[in-house]
Image (tube, rainbow, N blue to C red):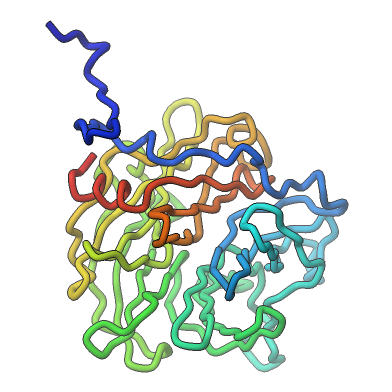
Length: 334
């Protein structure tokens, strides 16, 4: 006779049923890969956006220095490039990567260049940065691009406020570009995931709701997307979720699966989270109990997903696990 202690069944090599998705990803033994203690003058280091650049792994890292840099005496985030040939040992640039490249209105109002989402489309790497706007409701999504991660070209603002975490699909679908949006959030409002379409990456419409916050306890307040990853079963999207129980706010990581041809349709999701803050470096820092992804790298040849995430605004970490396992967990609603 089974007992309550036997309810949770782990998946073994024979494919036995698994009741949740919390064991698919494993933290890298070298975590944290980058930590503020290694960078004098750095107050916060967090929320990397990863992408493969040839054989090199690139992270667009959010950084806040102790010294105010915007002329208003505020803590202002910047984006810096970290590079690695093995995906584990990174060198972080001291140079700020994202620049406004304009003194014309309204660009001098924009600041705090963090939490990027980067997507390779053809020969360009497109970056959506949720920027704050001095004196106005924000953030808004600023689109830019690069070919070498040395130079940055600003294109335009492509979302209305508030929109944090807008993420581009890597290919056109039925002749159109698509992006996942995260309107709302903050000031007590929910943050949900929507989708929009464009023919030129600048002008966007055809807005549709995709999935609302609160489908499970761990995302009851907010939910947000990252750049979708194409699989044979659908578009895999790693998401974050926010929950604030009596003990404080917690950030979790989960996943959803979208239809390949109609990407506004959710065809699967993890009902359990993939990860929650549990290690000491994920529980205590500048922003306690926070693990936050801005993207992941699929390793199709070895069936792995390399998920880079920020921890407590103090460090950059890595978790890896079966790509097909996460897709299967979404399909089964684990």
